[in-house]
Image (cartoon, rainbow, N blue to C red; front, side):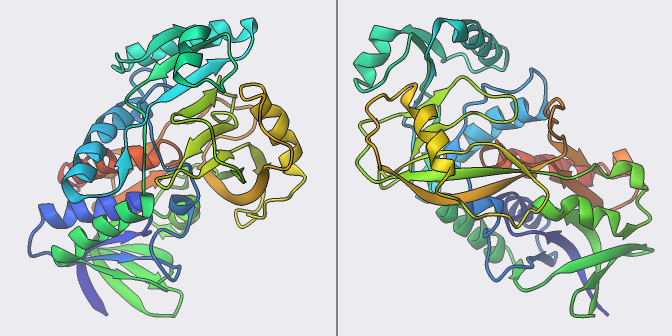
Length: 371
């Protein structure tokens, strides 16, 4: 049986960031990233809005709030240093009727509580001066929000990891693991086994399922997985906006918002569809009917026939319909009592923004483990 110093399961943006941090902090150690797909970043990490969030929406003191603000600054600095395409374009969060103004005020208060002090309330005229095609009664302006080429970011993380001696292995599915005096024995789908001193479960949508197959881990530590599908529609004409446009948030998501990619292509989404199958990623044309109504609340000039089915993503949620949104969960040795194991659960938005901060937290968790 082969043996390595550590394994990260999952080559999404968080898994790659974690692997990079661990390999750089432990020079000379042999780390692997094991990914069941044929390439890095083909799951949730490739099916999102590619937004660098400022840290506005999350409860004060939560891991989402802390790691988003920390990760935002780390991501901007990293992207600038490494030449990863990104742009600090800013965002407007809009109230489209008077009844939404209390929600906008609550968002402003939450942003300032989270340390995002550059968010300001502006009137409708100020918003239209920034974005003439916009319709609203008031808005919040977040200048720290931006966009990033997520795949270029992941390729850079992979390069750092491999330059530090790590190896990414694709077509490598971990189906179970059991604790061993020298760490963790991983059982692979092809029947092989691998011994790792440290194991980080960053499997995204599959993280709870993999944790349930870790013999020795109390099942009480494993949350229930829920799947919230988000559909995106692309805009077939040039968008008359230079900033991201967000409505007041919904209960399970941030509403059907307008985002831009590095090439200027606009897309709208995601909506929220609770589904049972995490592989249900088909975008139906019928969904677009609801998108037109949602978008026209803040962009009345959206032309008929301009929206085209784009792609869908799946939020790896650990809270279900009607439940309060769950925080990120980083579960290390100090939580479950098992040496060398870290589980990451519920790493949905703002996971991309938070990825470098999450990596530092995993590093700290393994460094402070107990026997």
